[in-house]
Length: 92
Image (tube, rainbow, N blue to C red; front, side, top):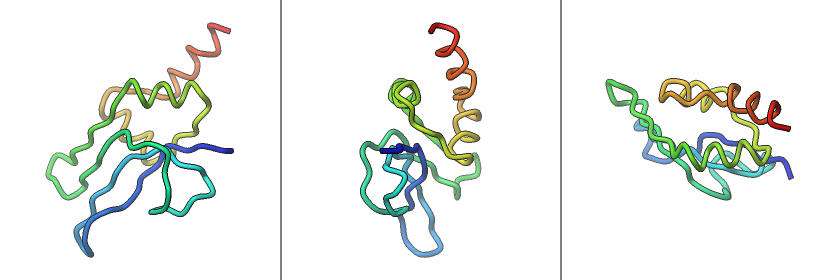
């Protein structure tokens, strides 16, 4: 099963709000997910995003792929998933 960390859209029409979730890559965008690890509100002036760093890193360590949008949100919050993957490979 391929697992991805990606956005799940919630909210009304013209008022987007997203949840950052861990989901099976075959599941629909707004379908079933395994775990919610954060939120993202693009309508706020500061483009507010909150991510549970420990949970995200645990999923990345277990092999979850991160979508490009979530990867950029993580970098804005001080989490670099690519650097974390390199550190894991060096330990092995």
